[in-house]
Image 1 (cartoon, rainbow, N blue to C red):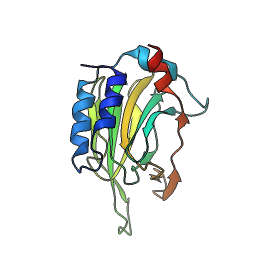
Image 2 (cartoon, helix red, strand yellow):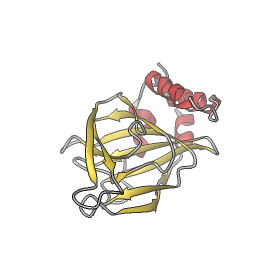
Image 3 (cartoon, helix red, strand yellow):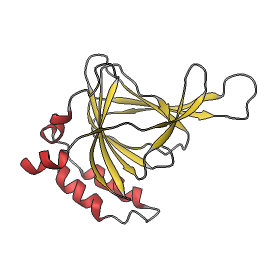
Image 4 (cartoon, rainbow, N blue to C red):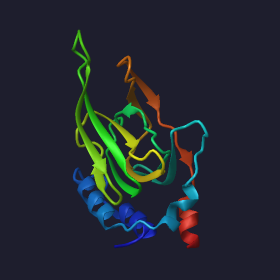
Amino acid sequence: MFGFSVLREALKKLNWKDPNVMVNVRKLLLSYESEEVEWKDFFFMADSESSYSAHEVHTTPDKFMMVIIIWRPGSSGPLQDYGGSYCHTKILKGCLIEEHYTYDDRRQTGRRLKLKNTVRLERNRVNNLNEFKDFHLMKNASGIEEAVSLHICTLPLETCTVVDMLTEEKAVTEISLVHSSLVEHVTRL
């Protein structure tokens, strides 16, 4: 077991051109022992209206990005893909529900979206967000407590496709993150 600084340095040393790099990312995340002191400074919502706040805490250009997401009680993110990026997540606090959907562009009548499965992600659970290759939606399972998740994503992670759950219309959108400096915070510990 090791902390955030060691995780970050180990991720930097991986061969990100290796097609199996995410297997090694998963192993590292399983060994990472989350300490709230390492991420508590990011336990704020950048926008009082948002259901969640995504904080970019480290980026190694052309390789990977580390993002911490704070989820309000009962909140959910959009139904989206990862725009060709691969992503693993580890639940640092609370519990998230991930719903996987297929989308049939060819369907002329009826619903194009179909719920494929639902996964409950408890604290310390590591999950491959690209496992089903379609769209997913994540939501905080608790209606009273915040949840926190760490995401390790391959770059570039600039856009994603979002699906409106009511109209089933798709739109490509830019990914918006709060740029934070966990490196400075971790160095102070």
